[in-house]
Amino acid sequence: MSTAPSAQPNPAPSAQPSPAPPTPAWVRHYQPGVPAEIELPTESLVALVERSVAEGGDAVATEFFGRTTTYRDLGDQIERAAEGLRRLGVKAGDRVALVLPNCPQHVVAFYAVLRLGAIVVEHNPLYTARELRHLFEDHAARVVIGWDVALSRLRDLPSDLKIEATVSVNLLKAFPAAKRWALRLPVPSLRATRRKLTQPAPGAMPWEQLVSAPRLDPSHPRPGVHDLAVIQYTSGTTGSPKGAKLSHFNLFANARQGEAWMHGAEYRKEVFYAILPMFHAFGMTLFLTYGILKQARLVLFPAFDVDLVLAAARRNPPTVYCAVPPIYEATAKAARERGIDLRSAKYCISGAMNLPAATVEAWESVSGGLLVEGYGMTEASPVCLGNPFHPSRRTGTIGVPFPSTLMRVVDPADPTRDVAQGERGELLIKGPQVFGGYWNNPDETQRTLLSDGWLRTGDIVTTDADGFTTIVDRVKELIITGGFNVAPSEVEGVLRSHPGIRDAAVVGLPAPSGGERVVAALLLEEGARVEPEELRGFCRDRLAGYKVPREFVELPSFPTSMLGKVLRKQVRDHLLAETQG
Image 1 (tube, helix red, strand yellow):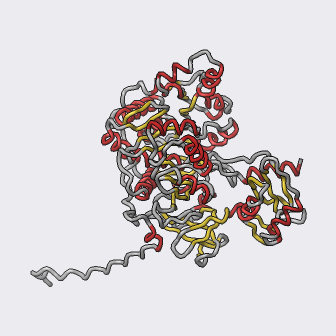
Image 2 (tube, rainbow, N blue to C red; image 1 turned 180 degrees about the vertical axis):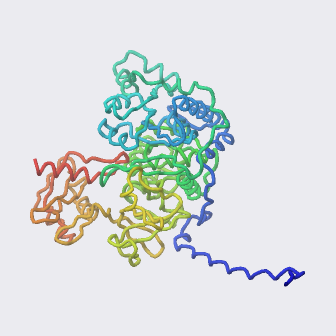
Image 3 (tube, rainbow, N blue to C red; image 1 turned 45 degrees about the horizontal axis):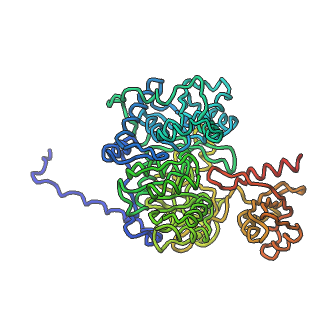
């Protein structure tokens, strides 16, 4: 029988470590100090806000028409609202609907729901009863926290949706006392303003009652980092809205990616102007997660109003001003005319639509930093590409992938095949911010999320050798005519260059012979008149024949998303109804 050797055996040779993947080419164009990778979160968003409350203390968390709330008070209200919701029966995994504009109560409600391990479902408070019904039928939330003006539309929802509790938010209660008093004056214009801001909500619990509860028991379980945090509905530009499932990990990671990108932003020193709606993915991440992470002052605006923005700028000038091109244009114009200094604005990101060079020039003439274009989608929490806050930025592109984010450009018909650099293809994204699928929609999830974790964006792009990316069009909005693909944005760009045309939306309508015909909806400059034949000749000089619109239709306005992006699908539906009528 053999015996064990007295000496320890030589250790087995260790396996050779796998070589680190090459650093993507685009990283060298990052602003100095921006890392290629972020530290991935190991805690939930509840830990994020609790840390900010503890460290922020008496620093201002929110400002609303001049009235402020400190981080300490914010934390107290979150814990009381969480207990109030618990007493209403909300538990981990339940969906709670928020139907709120930007206001202090929105910040509190968001984190109170998450504190219980429940799931926030955001809604546009301007949605009609029909639009709200579609969403409520999908997510089946039983508790609603809503602006009292919007709650009247919920009363029109069918009883089978079984909403068990409604909490009404009166925006005026968050106003400074002097402003509340002024709105009580018996002046017709003030009465009209008061009616727009608040309406009776019979049967609903007042928000003030909810937050009068004692603080939640500290031992109440907190959610895990990979638990579902938010169901965020897509804008539905190419179909019915779908609920993107965003986890605490997704949203926390995107907040950290934003922190890395805005290198140099300081804790408790930044002033975020919350103009973009927090019920939209862009505003949610900028303000509710990233802004709170930085322990910033969030100056809240229920809707964009240039007068309110510039009045606030006199008190507390913005350092972070994120918006869409029309808002930048309006703000820059008014600030220049009124002599208001916006040089405090150091971090400015534009998204949702093309950023014209003229807008960049106008904004940077009055602000103190670069205006850069970024790219995101609800399914990516939402930000995944951006231009650096650095001279390496390239206006006209959506920039390069964020830290810890990869991209590919593939054949839309075969997403396993990458196209050559510079060729048009569909953009694919991979990173910690990519969602976990659609709520109650496995078929769309399978079509959108590839088995290896890549997200199909549906956007057609080109990239250069440095990774700077330019959007060409949407896969689902390409027009197929005579066997050829027509990119609507290309035709729209030509039409907008015509001196009589203010804007254009190009869509495909069914052709009698099968396929589609190219049709252009137009918004004309004031007093302008255009002749179809002249427009066709104008387009023929600049486009291949199959891309030239067969019809031109003048419209008084275009339907737009909550961020001002033209909704081509709704334009198409309108034109289709007109032709069939």
